[in-house]
Length: 97
Image 1: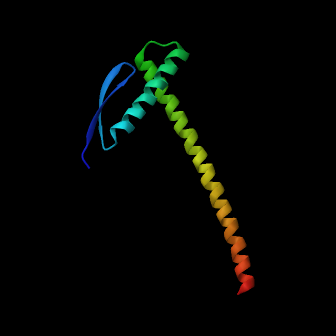
Image 2 (image 1 turned 90 degrees about the vertical axis):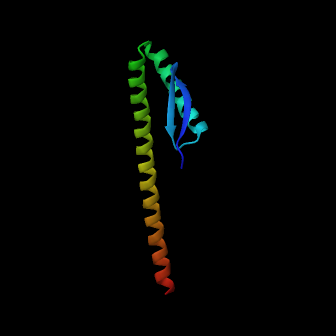
Image 3 (image 1 turned 45 degrees about the vertical axis):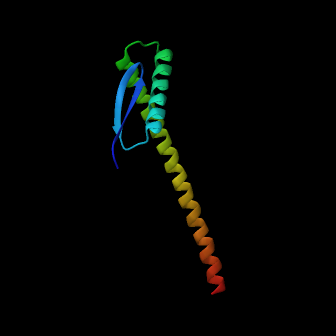
């Protein structure tokens, strides 16, 4: 697959993002990062773009870890239910056979 370059603006800075992703997808990501940076800058009353970027990265990393933990809990619940269903099915089949 050919790499595409998408021009975006994040926190008033232009970037050329190269990758395999669709340009619209890259723009949505850039818009999300820009929005998060602006939100954090307003809340923390910061003007230093490096500090805003670091706080944004920490915020996004926290969101990612929270979602990973949620997924792990859901996977565990699915595993437990599948195991319970398998046990019920095994008991039912043993009665038939």
